[in-house]
Length: 430
Image 1 (cartoon, helix red, strand yellow):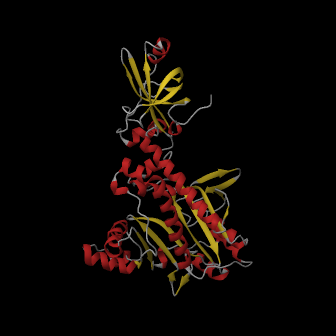
Image 2 (cartoon, one colour):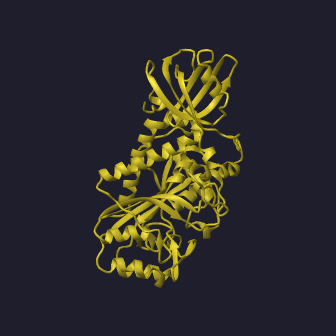
Image 3 (spheres, one colour):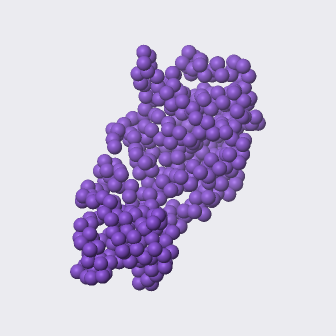
């Protein structure tokens, strides 16, 4: 008999299920076992006098043991788990579990020490069902809009962007680095005439940050596309793609998100267009409304507190969870952002008070790009990259999203919980 996932069990059928023992009530005459697989839970009800040989097996079972059970699925209105129970005819113990070293309410760092145990709960499993749907929606949207999926190298010969915050490694007789982003190679694909590309892959940042939103390794979803008119084309594509993804997640998982994480995390499918404000406008408004001020020297970029307040501002002014922010100081933006009258032609996207995207129109003109790099003191460091633009390149732009950070904001959790296995300055295991 083939295994049946619990969610697909139909009363009146013979079934074979496998999963973890979530609960066990082993009485004198009856035993009630709750079995959990990734699709759901079901109760197994054993009348001991009818199957004394099975009763002996049940006596050996511990919580979180893995078992396989064959029997008849029957309807029972008194059973809370979907009104179905299994009357077993065969029980196989696949694996006996020791007493668990953590509980669902243990401290996060203790839970991370036993991450494979921590992930067994329905609440934590939902995190990765959500990520799967997000990634699938992004990919489906882009494939429908003529994008190519590509895979850029993660071991590179020069630092990806600023030269700081990179992991250096020994590479045969020389040095190499782990890529901070696929930025340079996305643009190489534009110079290659690919026109539209995206990638879902690991990103590495050597940041000694201990915040709820930073990690040294995370999953990035990056895209780049050619023949744009200006950076507003990039913004328009992102809001369209995000709206499509949020509708998909809402339709599939909103009920589960509300049930397991709370009504405040109900998925809101946004209206379009998303609101847009300049950095200067945001600082003016949050000073007038909330009394928040920063020195003039800091007003070229949003502080973390200003990001948080921009969410409150977007809700008050526009009734919206998203806010595009433009008009950053050139000193605060990467050298490959195109500039117009000294203003970078780029944006950040804030969702629920946290930046989820930096995007821009890129500088595709060789001389201007070299001048920008030299201004940042990056001439020779990025010479391999600037070579991509010597032989013609279309105007283009793009952005990147952190899937783990998106997940974190969806559910109100930390980056440690949003990643399958977290990597930070003080964690390399498991």
